[in-house]
Amino acid sequence: MAGRGSVFSNPRVLSLARSFVPAADEVWRLQRGEDADCRFFQRAVNGGEPITDKGTRQGIWVFAPSGKLLAKVNSNRAEVVADMLERGLAAWEELPPEERRLAEDAELEPAFRWEHNYPEGGLVLERTARDLRGDFDSGFGADSKPSGRFNRDFAWFTAEEARAWLPAHPVVGAKQPVPTELVARLARFHLVDNARGQTLPYAPEEIREASMVVEVVAREGTTVELELSGETEMVAEGPWLLGENLWKPKQELARGIATTLTGRATFDLETGAFTSFEAIAFGRRWGRSPMNGRGRDASPSVVGFHLGLAPRSHRIAPTFLSLYDADWVRKPEGWADHSENRP
Amino acid sequence: MLSALFLLALQSSAGADWQHAREAALELPIPAVTVENLEDWRRAILPRAGERDWESIPWITSFAEGIRRADAEQRPLLFWAMNGHPLGCT
Image (tube, rainbow over all chains, first blue to last red; front, side):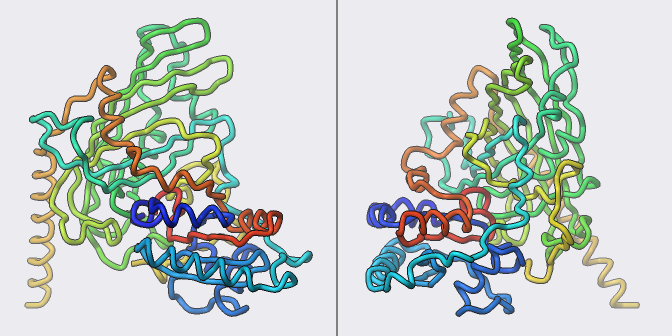
């Protein structure tokens, strides 16, 4: 996450990046999976052999399309990355044409990616979480300088689930609770403390509160204006309640977050889709999880959340999609979680 | 017996700690948000101009597609790999 600000905002890196085809992907799957793209990646970074060790392959890499590794580094220092990119470009220039091209019979297409579950026509939210250093009483707000620690995730709802946010008869004044399972999805997986880094999901038993109400405040033809309000609270006392899966931590750490949410949205009954959606939530968090960056300071603080419609081009799977309680989430054949390397 | 009592005391202490932390968190002041001031809070939470530079790079969102595009354009691939998708939650 730090690389977004420290590396890929650096003018020299941005300039060098224009000489490449830039791509980004989740490496946990690539370095352990058996899909064609995973095997290709593993051979590319591991001297032509599948990866059998547990060392991380996170980092910034330069490859020829053939899969030949030209340069690599795992650093959040812009100058170090820029130097590596220059070495990669020099290696590319020296590479014979026959070593550049992707082999005609190269297999790259994955049989399964979580992104294959993308809910076409559904509600796809981009969720931003930011640490807030708050003296709210003295006017903290748009004009203040909030913490630079923020993170992004996506929340997915199918078209059918999106329609379920509204009252069946959406006339002005109609008000209804959002279905519990949909609010629980937000509470367990998205209104969580990952502003500083990845965190853990919550189990259903760890929901103390998950309620949201939608009210129709205006309607014109098939356009329905809505206001949202809700409360969530999650408390993990320590023991892991989500079974054997890749998120199972090696430490038992207590943590929790209580949020208050306010929002507004517009739904088009004709297309059956939200045309706008915006919500703000403030989460009062405490404790920590193994990777969420609270190790040195787990004292309570406030996290601000923004939920808005994601551009259609953003098809990154939600972090905890594999744990969604939803029958539309297809899992890869022979899906087995791997817990051995998680903290 | 002694070790069991010690463990019980430790668990009890840990339980008291997290309950104290929760209570302290719930006492933190949070601002009042209304549909009228949503925009102010949007600006406070969403990345600002200087924080979005990394998004100016036209990232392809999968390794396989990146390799294919690099081959089509005969350019080297710059590949950013993280636990958690670098363009999502990482």
